Amino acid sequence: MKNFPVAASVAALALAGVLVGPAVAEQSEDSAVATAEDAVTHKDNDRVPEGAAWTQHYFPSSDGSGAELHADVLRPQNLPKGKRVPVILSVGAYFGHSGELVDEKRSHTGPSDRFKDLVEGGDLFDRGYALVMVDLRGFGGSTGCLDYMGKGEQADVRAAIDWAAKQPWSTGAVGMYGKSYDATTGLVGNNLNQGALKAVVAQEPVWDMYRLTRSNRVPKLGGILAPDTYNRIAQLEQLPDDQERYRKNSGYEQKHPECIAQNTDNNLKADSRSPYWQQRDLARHAQGSDTPLFVTQGFVESNTKPEAMQEYLARHKGPKRAWLGQWDHVRGNERAEDGRLQMGREGWFKEVMSFYDHHLKGITPKTDLPAYAIQDSTGTWRAQDTWPLPDRSADVALRDGSYVDKGEPGASAGFFTWSEPVERDVRVTGTPQIDMRTQGSGNVMVKLYDVAPDGKAVMFDEQVSLVASSGRVAMDLKSTDWTLQAGHSLAVEIGTIQDGAWVDTPTGDRIKVTDARLNLAVDSPADDVPTAGERSPYLDTYLKAYTKKLSPGSPTFTLPSPRT
Image 1: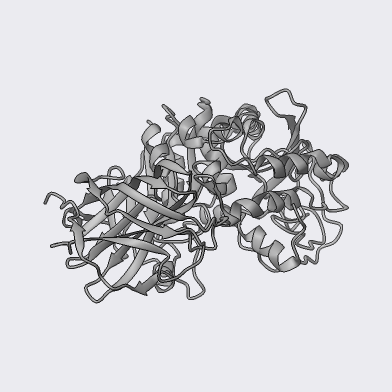
Image 2 (image 1 turned 180 degrees about the vertical axis):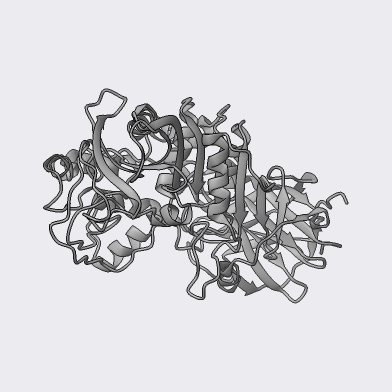
């Protein structure tokens, strides 16, 4: 893959799921470096959190590949000899000592502060937990070729769980924690069905790696940038004062250019049915899994979108908790510049630590919290025992039409089908699906709009696919939770791709669409059980970006009315 200029590289790094902050220059000199035997505290290295003792460890992955994994361990500083504590484990690509995504210009080595917010907000060490951060193969102080959540990285997760559970200071109870990539390793951990793993907290994970990279064979821009992003992270220079072993292991990709070539080439595979992508379909591999799971997902996410989420949650048979709503790629505790919580709900760490206390320590929660806390498109929160919880589902017939696959916005970009205005508020929930017969080669894009009586329309769901010369196209849209207010209509647009999030190749062909059907699940907001939460700040940003004026057409179908 070509080398991007600096601005493009930073944009690519942002897709990794972490905000790129300013470089950090620390002032301390001659700071102590931990080993497995000699722990270091904040007093001797200011990168170690207060109240923690830092050690470094190495152990093999579980696949016999020879990959050696590195772990930074933070245990309570005053832990009595022989005392054991449960472990919060995170396994990922962002724990390198020189920086998460770029060289942060630190003056000396130390453990990553990626989850400083968890350490402080969860009061981890005073509550009697250890935090273990393990570098996936190819990152930080671990050897091996990065594997983009394939069998190799899955073996790393297995080894990390086993290692954390067997340490003399561990009770053997492990909980995983992460956001974005290291939330996805939590889903992997759940799928591995290891007895030591007692709970997983995964914020904005990827449910199926293929769908992060492509949509029904159409490349996504993020999928094109991702290999370059992670290759660059794996090649970060580490700090000169770190352990010799750590430095020797780091930069494995620089010494093994075949790693870069393999990672780049493999991500170009277009067919989701290939063995490469089948390994990485985490939703499929979740069948029958039962690790207690606490997830967050933004329905209007710009990065790790709600694709295959419903499949994963349906196949997972264990206890589930979730915050679902109208936010972007953020953490549960993250705040906007004006101080408002990005998700809009207070108490993230309170709920997380209650979840861990319950499943890792056997402490019964003192507060009865909802299994699912959900914010719909009106910005209001409700509590449910599960999600989705539809009152009714139905197939609606869409009208026939055609469009030119020209790959750009325009008056003739596609054709619309309109519903009758709904008589009362109706929520579209779950994962809409569309099936259609097509003639012509090219691309197709399907969009769902919430249209007010004055024509003000919000695009709230979309999906794209390649189209063969003739045949049927069936696809899932993104999972959603969107309320159409009384008097509003649902509009369905079918046409050429009009979004820079995909890198499509327009054919110029005229695509004819017949026998199209949209499957929808709906429920009634009148049945909602309110729970605490405020409107996500990002919801208004989304509405501003995805609202336009449409001229309503003649209705041809009636949206199924939920039972009340």
